[in-house]
Amino acid sequence: MAALTVRVLGLEFRNPIVLASGPAGFGLELAEHYDLGKVGALTTKTVTPEPRSGNPQPRLVDAPSGALNSIGLQNPGCDALQAELLPQVRDFPTRRIVSIAGRSPEEVGALADRLSDEPGIDALEVNLSCPNVQGDTVADDPKSVRAFVQAVRTATRRPILAKLPGDGDYLKLVDAALGAGADGIVLINALRGMRIDTHTGRPILARGVGGLCGPAILPMALARIFEARKAFPDATIVGTGGVSDLRSVLEMMCAGADLVGIGFAVMADPERVFGLEDELRTWMATRGIAAVSDLRGIAHRGGIDVR
Ligand code: SIN
Image 1 (tube, rainbow, N blue to C red):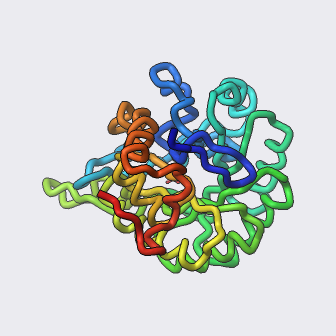
Image 2 (cartoon, rainbow, N blue to C red):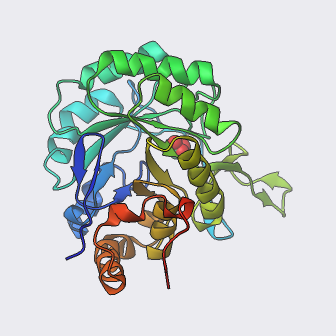
């Protein structure tokens, strides 16, 4: 039988499908309807030290082949995570990645420290790239990426994933994150975008600009994963951005992703997301591919006979 397991970050993942931070929340609603054991990992909504109510409404609008969101890191804060959510999340039959963010390296380091003795967390994602907040929560230059990652590295022995933007000089940010002790990267976050209400001539989102997600950004994400894999052949890469079906999962892996994050599609078509493991297994069996990890980065090696 085709082997779907992926070994990265010192962990074994049942399959390469990761529920990306955001649409899956803390997995509680999904767990009522779907078997979380069908995905390799759940990434929680990003948690900050204090509860945040996020940006004003409207903060979600459709876009061609996707959507623009401007949530603004709405989350219940670390106290609620520890008291109410983690006791449920830790029982899920999948790997659990807790996503964290803070306004300064000290703040996010302290958050990682608070979580360091919590059981049932397999890895931390440090969200350095939310397009919907202003100020220090976003690290968009190598120096600040280094400072945030170093602070978390000092605070925890858990595997750290740095979630980076797809805009700007992102390869320099990847280099900074890995150099500062991140065990891997999550690439890419939603890309800045806008829609205008033609009745009023004003931006539809209350904050004006939001993060474009969904199939619209898949080609941009693939190019960045491809370039990151080329530049960092040994790095652990979670490829996210516009993944919605088997083809896009395969494309991400061929470009160089070890694991494949799915965000928007969890909202748009959860049935399909939870069916991907079976689709992937069938696809591999019909093509005689023994191990899913054999697909990683094959676009750099001349590819395979993929029909
Ligand atoms: C948000 O909460 O605005 C989305 C999170 C993110 O894009 O990092």
